[in-house]
Structures are given as C-alpha cells and as structure tokens.
Length: 530
Image (spheres, rainbow, N blue to C red):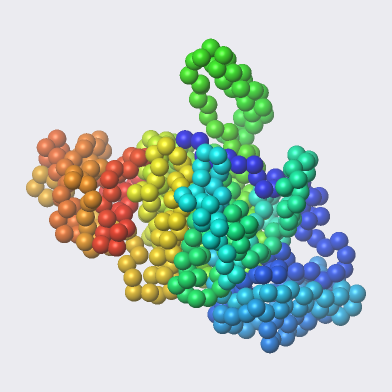
C-alpha cells in the first residue's frame, strides 16, 4: 500500500525560522494564532486566554461582559481564565497593556463546541478531494452548499518540529510556492475562518461533515480544527514524554532508526527508480513497483505533536476526532499499534489537561492493502475501545478496494457525529457497531457473542469472512449462521476450535449490521493480535 503523500502545507523549520515565527518581534501585546477573529471558544468550561507582552507589563483582558487583569511574567507570557459561558455570540475580545504594548482586539468570536480533528490523509482529505484521482463523492455540490456562518474552521499548517512550539507558526512559503500566484494569495497564517465554499474546499471533509451534523443537531456554534498530514505514522503525533513513559513504546525509536539509516541514499534510490520506470516504459513492460518513500520530518517521533498539537494544548476543547493507521499497517509497525495508539489517546488527554476528553476515531477502511497487517491495525483500534470515553466509527462497508481514500466521507462524518450524539451529548440513540465480546465452544464449533448487536443481520445471502482455528492458530474458512445477537461458526476441518476471527482480510467481506445500520468490526478472539 502506498499511503497518500501530499506536499506539506509547511515544511520542517529551522530553529531560527521557528523562533522568528512564534516570538514577538516587538513589545506589542500579542495573542496566539489559535485565538483570532472568527474563533469558537469552548462553552461550559473556564475560558483560557493567553498571550505575550513586555515582561512585567500589566494586561487587562475583556471578553463579553467579563474583565480580568494579568501580569506578563519574566518571559513576557500572561494568562487569564474567564468564567464559563453559554453558547452564543458574536463577541469581542480585547487585550490591553498598560504601556507601549498597546491593545489587541478580536471580533466575531462565538461560544460553542470545539473539536480537534487529526490523523493522516483520510482525515486531511478535503472537500475538493485529491484531484484528479481521488474526488469526494458529490464534491462540487457539497462545496457549493458549504456556507454556514455558525461553523468555523482552523486549518493548521503542516510542520514537524524538534521541540514543542508555543504557537501555530505562520506558513513559510518555499521558492516554488512563491512562484505560484494562487499560493501567494493564500493567507499564510493559521487562523480561524468562517465556513464558506472557499474555505471548506480546502478543509477536512470528515471533520466538516461531522461538524455539519453536530451543528444541525445541537444548534450551537461549532469550531473545527484540522491538524492532519497525509502518510504519517502514529508515533509522530505522540509527545516525547508520552513515548518515553512506557518501555513497550521503544519500538517507535527502533523503527525510526531503521528508517533513518536509509535517508542518506534516498535521492539515489529515487533516481534509480525513475530510471527503471522509464526503461520499463520504453520497453513496453509492466512498470516496476517500489516501496513508498515518506517525507522524512513527518515521520519523526513526536515531530507532529511538537509542531501541530502542542501549540493547541492550552485551548479548551469538546473532544478529539482521529482517522489514521494506514501508514502503520505493515509488518514492522502493526504489532506495536495498540500500545502506540492507546499512548496517543492518554498523552493528548494529559497535555490538554481537561480530564478524559472524548476521543472519537475511525477504524481504517477496506482496501486491497498490506495483507494481514491491515486487519491487525483494525483490531488494534477495536481493542483500544477499552479506554474510557472512546468510540469508533466502523467503515469497512464504504471502503474502496482500489483506493486507500474512499470517496464517501459523508458517511464517515455522520457516524462520528452519531457517536458524539450518543456518547458526548447524551442522546438516547444506538451509536456503536456490533463489537466482539466473547466466543464460547459449542459442539462442532464456536458461538460468537457481540455487544451492540440488536437486530444482527447480513444483507448477503451467505455470511462470509468467519474462520476457525485450533491450538496451532492456523485458521480455515468456516460456515456462519446468525442466531439472535450471536453468530454460530462451524467447520468440519476444525471440529474442536480454540479461536475464531472475522473479516481478517484487507478487503472486507459483506458486513454484518445491527438494527441501527452500523457494520460489525473485524476481530480475532486470540488473546493477543498475531
């Protein structure tokens, strides 16, 4: 499988460039980019406003009908916490210094719910798609209709950093980008915008459809932060503190060492691959297939956490949205995905310091990818539901065997929104897919019990995808029959099975559904993922 690689919105920055982008050039009072005109501030919790001024300066901050004082510390940093507010707006925020700092006024701020969306290319996938080969389903119509002033969008620049940044850096255009008039005219700042066809076209489709559903159901302003980067691995999004908290996570550094050992030859390798491709074309031969080459800085452990997540951690959220895992679906990385993914969830909750924030994620979809590594990552995601306040959107039924980027992002966003409505907003609705609970021996087979399996059914005439194995863990196809909220699985080849699994292929079989129309996740009953 070749995960989608796009030119980064911003490359890895040197120390000097980063410092120039995040430190004030003068004594002017300054707010972080995440607090800008058109921002959404989280309702119902203390509202954190922070910034920079001359060390020792007295600062007065006013939001809505609240005013608070602060004093810049020896590093010039100041901070205030306003009392919680109900949904509403638009409001004005003013931060005023007592001397030459002057004042800073922001307008059109709303109070509502803020969701941070992150991951790799299927989260990055914008409403305009990845043209020309990966369009969004009904893309032009969706873009035309994406005009909602109650939804606000913040597109985070793509940056990998050696250390955690305190602010979202402005985009540093390369010489190639500067030669592109369309890119030159883009706002280089990572700031909030209103949701219009123009801004939504470049924004995560999954996050947009999620927000559109939540805004319609909850009738409150919705702020969406898109901090995603295609073709990235899970450990790039975890802080160094998180990666160093558990010896089981050392695999991230071992994999990085293997990857870095080839970097010196990357240019020569790619040049050789181009020559071999051209030679095959000239000889009318099948084109050779090569291993995908990721963008180096985007695979650095903690690099994307440092550059794209750390600057957001002081900002109050309603919860997280996550869609990633395709780049980890290979024999070297898949065995470690459970530990790394659970570490990411706990790491982000720790750094945002708002308790067990809801973490809603998408299980990677059906795709003719990397053989058994694909279902291993899927099952690792399922097992991560053991962490509190998590929910998973299963999407095997809307995948595309021929594309790692399924066109139907509407259903993905809707299923995440369904999970939010049930788990976060407390609606009495069914929002979870059938999930494996246990398997017990029966004469000649095994009976599989599911949670959330009311009305379990298959739209196919024959239930496929179940397999049985004995103590040797060698699985063979088996026959399956739905019995209420369970499935009876039998095979004459394994009369006394020890284990059962379902959909253990990268291209999923026809799914099982519950009465809510949600497809069952794949699984193996083995205690550990093989």
